[in-house]
Length: 232
Image (tube, rainbow, N blue to C red):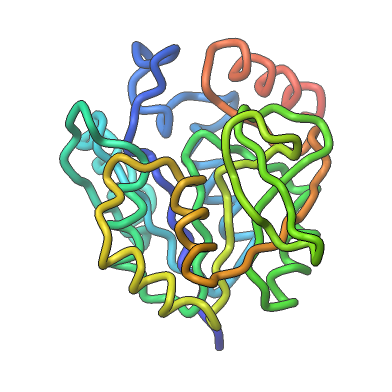
């Protein structure tokens, strides 16, 4: 059976909520952010390997995961003034054992309503990125005429979120690229661009903007908590 490695990157603090600690452990009602994300991963792929990457307040996150989720792999790395999310991705890919890869920034929460559509595209065996019609992201992309992604950058018209899928067909090519380059200072969208330059093609999967949330400030955290309370 095909196995999917899901890498959740919680390496960096968000400046606006740094005082709250590692965002993985921020309470969002009845659970913490990381609990919600692990639940999402288990709905997305039953035969999975979940890898959480940490750096900022690493020991607290490791203690929490070891106690509550002993089967989840936890990997920590150094944190310097130059460290970006790319370093966490490199560590995650190095330790991933799955046939396919799902890579996500720890500041994303995706609701149950979007799971079935994402699973459908996984079955189609092509690499993809997550987008919406209404933007909550300051990063976007443009397409080639055939619909594949041409380039990702700030303020491009179609919003891009830090969650993408690498199918087993491209797994080795992607892993080789990650291992042979220094991506410590890179954003995820820059790594996607480098992947495209290595002839790894991506398509976009559009989900309803109401079903994806960026947890990067107090306002977005409280908004998500209020929404959950309405459905309890």
